Amino acid sequence: MKNIILLFAILFSVVSVNAQKVGSTKTESYVADFEKKKDISAFMDYEGPQIPIQILKCGINDEVYEMYPELKEKRVGLGVANISMEYLENLNRFKFTEDKTEIKNRMVKQFQASQAGISENKLDGRGKINLAKYFVTIEVYDYSISEDETINLKDGVKDNLVTRLGLQVRFTDAETATVISASGLGEAKTSRELTLLNDATLDPIKFNQSTISIATKKALDIACANIIDRMIKKGIFTK
Image 1 (cartoon, rainbow, N blue to C red):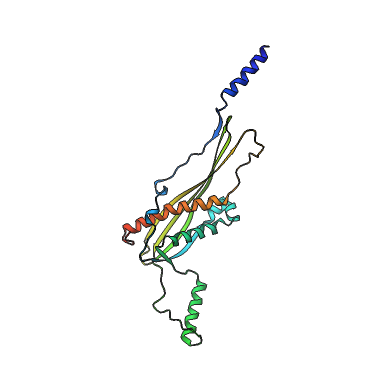
Image 2 (cartoon, rainbow, N blue to C red):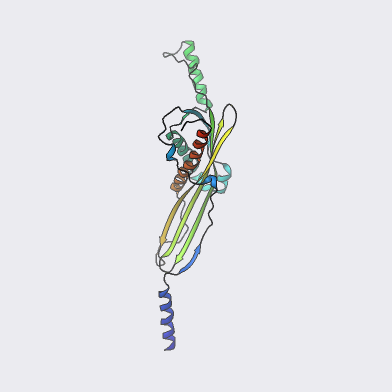
């Protein structure tokens, strides 16, 4: 009889504390001042002179690929490059000049054909070609994934997967070689909740490519807002 009473007492104590946290795993998060969020909306809706730029490099470096081979397998670098190009164009402050030698050579051949009189239409490139005012590089300098897990008797298992992507944007003056640079750290969170009685697997959350896209855009918000702010202070843009 005493054993039965003791068993009921144990069961009652477990139920009464069913909201108690059983265990948790936490990862420290730190964001430097230069990486912190800055409002890009203040620099949108720009109408004014555009500065010609040339993109020299945009994407993920080999060191990051070596640490996270799944990024290369999923062609994430190409996605980062495409998003960055679209982002800069959407700012309406820059116009792009061609950097590919093959296309430049084709342009020269067309001009030569036009001058030689062997083409039907005439092309005159003299004084019309835009040279880049700035050479631009956009590089992923940091990429990490952290997973925080909380196990609770009442709520079950809660997983929070945080994808962090750090971007550095560099504008190098084509005449003076002076550099204007800024960095931004973007975060994208994926959450999963499971009850303790759930039949679903407790395997780690799988790689989600959409989190890279979200983190990239957030990082560009910060870095480009800082770039434009510094250009305004230098008198390159008026507002």
